[in-house]
Image 1 (tube, rainbow, N blue to C red):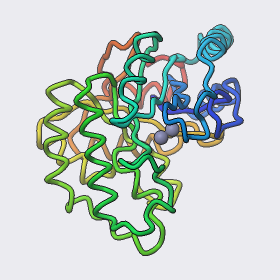
Image 2 (image 1 turned 180 degrees about the horizontal axis):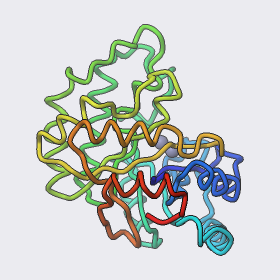
Image 3 (image 1 turned 180 degrees about the vertical axis):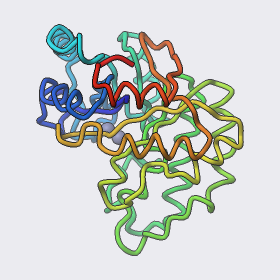
Length: 277
Ligand SMILES: [Zn+2]
Ligand SMILES: [Zn+2]
């Protein structure tokens, strides 16, 4: 199985060292792990200026030499994106050679992070509409291999805003799917929603089905782990869900080049525990 969204000591909100997550990945039947630390360009973000790329790549080399025979380790990043920071994001990506890059939206149009306070004085509709507008812009750039946690606001919605129904946004999602398919940009199934308030992945099966109906096939899988014990969490369930929705492959990456791995092969490798995809 592929856990393509894991944070490490290079993210401001994570104290888990790469070695711990590699050990947990092997124990959980994960065959490939992508360390996707936060790269923030919003100056108001607590993580702004925290990421140190040279140290990050050095740490990747160290875990590769220690775990490489049992686990494929990808150099990756979760790059925060919105239209205000687009020029900085473009510059950053031109300067760093990753295997895999997630583009994630965490801020609204007014530069306020989408945490529970953001919903005060806003309708859920306004929050989601703006969120999907930024997602559409992220897809259009073509800079990202996959889009992170496609319907993230549902995770942070406080009580009183927990009326999210993706059907209300299908009209906004359809052009996003068309753009993803045209540009070969994937989106991830982020399993952190399963262990947090929404109790469903981000996104859940309804959105995956619409994407498949639109002709989409490119998906990545990730746990968004900030703790070693959640590495691999929910991935078997996610593979079941993807198959039920008509997806037969998950996207894997090396040096930003995509290959599709059959889900059946991922299950066999996880069962065999041989560390190969
Ligand atoms: Zn994120
Ligand atoms: Zn993350």
